[in-house]
Length: 162
Image (cartoon, rainbow, N blue to C red; front, top):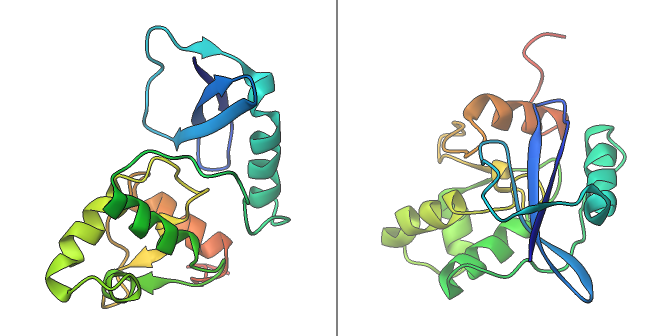
């Protein structure tokens, strides 16, 4: 059964979805742009732990989400997502460096970018930490402004105005 909740964040409302079974809820999506689908059940209590972690992250008290694997994705996407999860808080990595980290040849950088773009767990799986080769902020499902704000929040970028 797919359950969902919404929660406020400093960057706008977030939609969290998950699969519910006898063991609880496994987070399967966290996004700004998704819509609630017919047949989903609202169940805020099921997401209490993750919404608490999100608040702690935005308050500056949490750096790693430490959640059970969400599953989904192709084997290649899972490999890329695992590498993204290893990028430390407050740092960035380029698409090329990430491709190298997983042993993908240079001609697979676009495939790495596509896998990152398919990440269903924004913030939790920190794809916002992946940047262009020149340091440019490129591609983020939540929008480049949110990417800039997340990286600034984590200290990977300096604020524009102090």
